[in-house]
Image 1 (cartoon, rainbow, N blue to C red):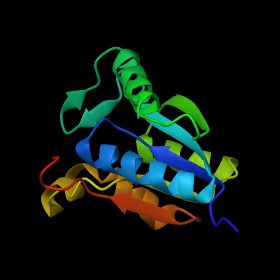
Image 2 (tube, rainbow, N blue to C red):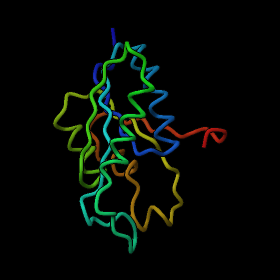
Image 3 (cartoon, rainbow, N blue to C red):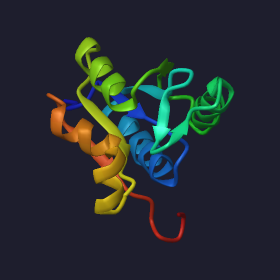
Image 4 (cartoon, rainbow, N blue to C red):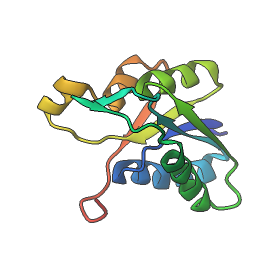
Length: 144
């Protein structure tokens, strides 16, 4: 009997997200689970860091993240993709609440304490607020 049937995988193009996807593919095959790959683009003009504003449109780069991720999936893995706009942590948590997911998988960026204090860590926010299990992955030092 499978533990996981529907897995939400948050992608941002980072090496950690790549490691999360790689691990999740093996898990999905083992558990006969379906994947939903999501990436979240900031709203137009939404700040993406201290003193920085988002470029007018990041849709192309986020579509590329999803396209490259789906190209790596074996045929036996069922997948849905979602390109969302908004705050990444809030959007991932909203999707997790609205969907029928058993697990959230995402990269853990390992930012310094100063960085987390200034702009917050998406993975940390999701981990603290999610009502379902969250698996955080880190890229190996060779692949980072």
